[in-house]
Image (cartoon, rainbow, N blue to C red; front, side, top):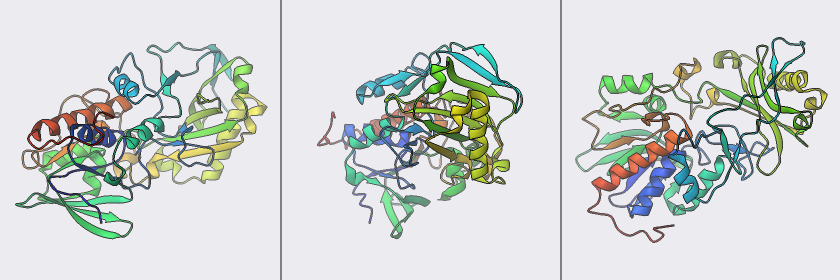
Length: 378
């Protein structure tokens, strides 16, 4: 049984946006319940170790970079949580592969401005830090909202859990999900207006069509050879490659798979991984053929991220301000997935912006019932 209590705000989605919303509401003294369909928190944030399991010193199978000079809203939260970050390694030559078997061309590395940064321990460090500041009995994993209905008394949400199906009551629900995923997976009664559902469907889900591959090594041999670890390829299967060595020194290269999502589904995964390692060998030399581990995440086959519409890449969320919820539902629900951010939609900064905005709106609307939280100010 999921205890939700009286006048409880329900957050559906335990990614960065949902956790930021829960954290701010808890700080303000508002009772909150967060449900996450996965068996872990983080959503599209997944920092994994060599065993492909979540790790406190992991490689980012989801988002990794942020740009403090371009998205300054991320720094206050990073500082508040006591996290540190490192610059993306760019020292050395970058390589360009025109065809399989051809010698890669060498070029001076581009100095990206603003500089790309990565969190020490992986982006999952932010998820862990937020979760640690919340009451553990308010976090419910393997709990998937499937229906929401309005009643005279409030909202009734149907939830599928590991132990069965439950119905819970709430005064307000924050959907910290990509709008497209929400439209495809949650039934509303009464249904939202057609224009609202069309907006949700038309909003691309960041990362959903993409796949990332990592090769872990005993040492960053490419740096010793004068290479930055950055490479571009017209041959594939990896089209963009970067140094992914962690702050603790765990050596790794990663690449974005350039094969479209629908085509990847027709491939043997082991063959794809072998081809990716072979390509790294062609670009960086024989030492790249012997990783100590490989990791792979195809977000397009993750049903808690991607829908059928996401199998064809459709650009990036547009940003700006939209009426994400129509007048019939605006009193009852809020959308706070990263794609709903006015600035940096889909990115880490967008998730923080959307989560902060949702929390601020709810705090303002519930100022008459705010009570001190036992751990307020943590």
